[in-house]
Length: 117
Image 1 (cartoon, rainbow, N blue to C red):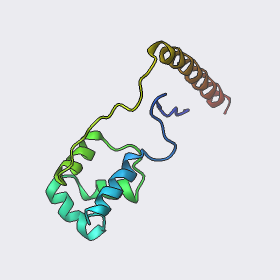
Image 2 (image 1 turned 60 degrees about the vertical axis):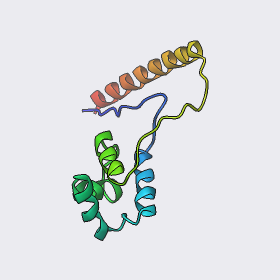
Image 3 (image 1 turned 135 degrees about the vertical axis):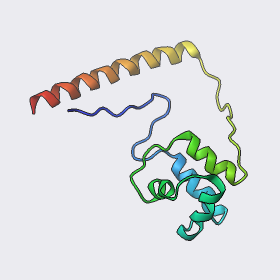
Image 4 (image 1 turned 180 degrees about the vertical axis):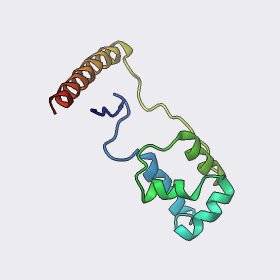
């Protein structure tokens, strides 16, 4: 069976969600990245030690937002959204439609290739 990985036109990445690198930096800055400090982080946040291992040394590619925020808020951080550009929504809708068409073609191609095996 072919597997098609979901991606978004406006937010995509190749290997791991960039939030994992941001978390690593925060934990390093806070002196909580070392494996022997993660138990304290677990006690503060309620996030499992295995979750941290999965993010930083394991196969986790896209962590849940709730787990990220549980960790961040336990360290005294909050989330903020910052507008960085003014968009032309008509132009963006056209680009989005084109992107959806490309994704549909890629899914069909993957489906066709998997049937040939």
